[in-house]
Image (cartoon, rainbow, N blue to C red):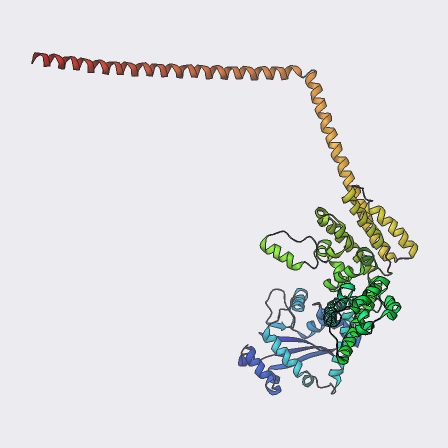
Length: 552
């Protein structure tokens, strides 16, 4: 069987024929040995046809199609022209080797050309890629490298889909950096507090905030130089005059040890680093809030910037988060607990990252699961609006937040919330005033129309049920009327017949019972007579024995 191979190069499609495979044997190790040597490999693999791409855009389109496992019309024409024709009845005497089984299956479905993809084919294609410039004689040196570089850049750029205004990668990096800074600032602050406490241990109890502690220590430096003259400046640093006086009094009676000037310089430098890190963390937090309001304004308005950024980071992108159903979004971040519960057949978790929202904390213990489910539903809606809307607005996020607040009041106080249709209609009106994109409004309008259709269908079902119940009640009333009227005689006759049957059954049962009693009585009489006869025979025998004894 002949083996053809399809190779997708950056410059075009090429078709190779591998012959003489029996000499090598279909062994990957033997092929690896022959791949490096062009003299041996050229005897086995030969070029059949080559089809160059028309332009760089055409090459990008063909590359995208192949990567997605789809066969283009250009590739189909190339294969049908250069491969033997496949007849419907007979089995083809050749096969086509491809690098990816997805495109192989698609080629077989459309053209019925048998395709295969295995390690042996991959090794042969690796040799083709290694010696491709020698097979194509018209290529100039450097042309293949330029084509590969240009196609690689354009393909990567198309995959990334770079958009300056809607970059959720910045949010992912910012929230990751914020978490790292929180840990670093906390550990550095604890280290600085412990270090400076050797000199001024009383300051730890007076000033609790880490950033403020570093700022005060940077201002004080040596506690022995602190006096009443420094009270205004210390008050400005602390923001509280009473605390400033307490610090000065504690410095006078401090039990800490004195430090060398070199040690004090190092402590002051470390305090400056801690303060800079804390300020940088604050700037990153403001940057994250600004980015979230630009990328996902509705999600940020509903659940907050930090929790929303954590959800986007955990999902990988805003698009991936929009694809998640609300049930997945609800337990996003609690995967370990979920799989542990499935493995041990225990209770599955009710919430993941969404637990950090203030709504879950405000709900009662018995309503936390309900609140998490409802909040995840609203977050899913807000995420999809943010992902697919052209113009960003936080109107829907604010309305969804109002709905969550109303649901909290419903769980706590029993106040009935508004309907979802009414809330979405009011949000659409405000969005129209703000100039939101018609595409997003069409999507939201279709969802509201679907909700109305569902409600109408439900109301129709309820009305049908009521009608069926009323009809059944009317039929029962009619049957009762007929029994009270003309149809009373046949029913009374049926009742009489049933009573007579019951009496006959009772009489037959009574007769049978009497016969059984008589049989039992006769049997008892027979047994008594037998016992009496036996007793009488025994008594006669005893009398005869006594008479014989008397004679003797």
